[in-house]
Image (cartoon, rainbow, N blue to C red; front, side, top):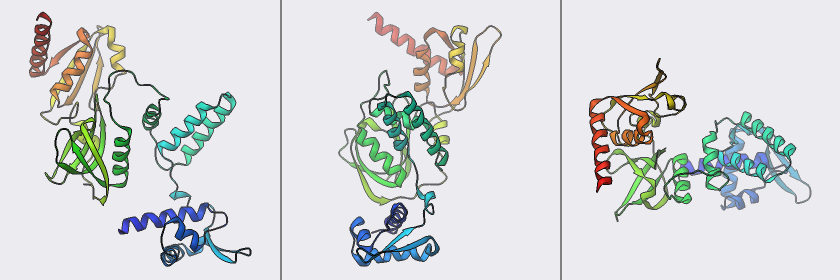
Amino acid sequence: MSRLNKANEIIELAILMQNSYCGLTLDDIAHEFECSRRSAERMKAVLVEKFGNKIEEVYNNKDKKKRWRFKKGTMNWLINFTSSDFANLELCKKSIKSPTKQKEIDELIEKIKALNPQNVSNVDVDEILSSQAYAVRQGFRENIKLETLQIINDAILCQKQIVIKYADMDKEFTLNPYGILHSDRVYLIAYNPYVKAIWTYRISKIKEIKLTDNYFDKDESFNMEEYCGRSFGVYQGEIFDVVLQFDKDCAEDVKEYFFHPTQKGKLNDDGSYTLSLKASGEFEIITEILKWRSSVKIIAPQSLKDTYNKTIQEMYKQIKE
């Protein structure tokens, strides 16, 4: 067993010892972690050595066994609430018809959030609710197995390697998963040890995936936001200074629309709206512009305008045929 696995079990034991009112015996520890009584003694000894003044020894007159527990509140900082926990509370709230009880649950959620040291994003909760059909997302989207996303999520959180079979390739790839990018499609950003580079993988093309017990060291210099911020979509390339002008009829909508982390906007005197951004990904930029139809025109760069005009001409040619 790796040292990291042992450390995880010690932390789990600490939480169990705090949550137990009566305390845990050596037999309880051995049963919980499926280990020998001697191993249970060593695990308990580690906690007693490190937190001796925080642990209480409890003697039960009925079974004549020694028990150990943490003093209440000692290990609260080890307890963390996840997006799944908050999503489950939201589901419970939806199952209750009483508005008063729903309000009480809302207040409970806010109290727990205030105690939670980790910032839980509302987007994460929405994703979980969507997967359970309590929130509906309209429009075209890829068919991705929830099990695949769960394995990737666990691998990212635990910094464990995954093994995948990708697209039509028979070869297996071992990857160090760094993050997930949501665009029109969903992508995995991962370091490939074989090519020694960070690559982007379309998750819907992952045919098989396995979570390994091998931990990896993440490149601390890698910043997910900076990496994704260099492109409009997922493909890294030449960065353009893009300037778009939107008609006044859609200016208010554009002001509230998120295109890219580098975007800057200006409301013009005639009511139109000028948007500027720095990004690569010519194909993705044009795809987004097409969504706005005749309400937008490209001011710069000229190369993007030329590619856009060529795209429109090819589409028109397809219609005529």
